[in-house]
Image 1 (spheres, rainbow, N blue to C red):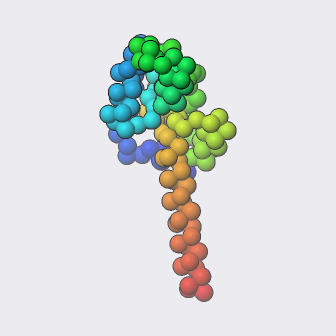
Image 2 (cartoon, rainbow, N blue to C red; image 1 turned 30 degrees about the horizontal axis):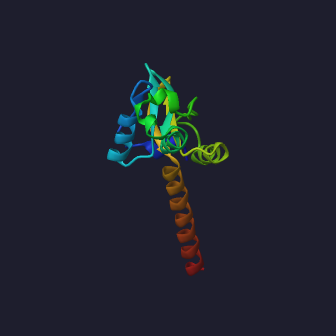
Image 3 (cartoon, rainbow, N blue to C red; image 1 turned 120 degrees about the horizontal axis):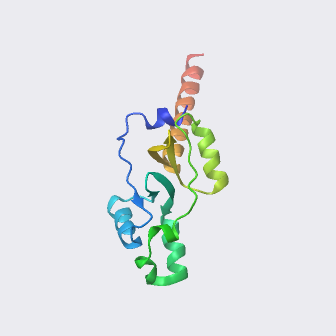
Length: 142
């Protein structure tokens, strides 16, 4: 299964911020929407990812002064992206190897979705449960 199929039917709105957005405002958006990360744009191009980890590391380093900085100064860059044609298991492997939890889905230079490791793990668990049910049915009918 591909990322395209996983995101099929989702809203095309991707919450994001710009590199100039104050960290304070980006943190408020993360908390308000109960999300873990935002893609960060510099014009039309993706510049990086701003995540909870960036906040934690920044607070440890700078304390409360972090909140007055621009997201572009503390985000994780460059952003690692995938295409809609990327296999879900390939994306999951990429996230595991790179120790990241969010991937922008990019096509034609445009971000069309933002997937989390939770999205991919849910897909994997659903697949395993379906396989287990199929095996149970097969065993019972034999």
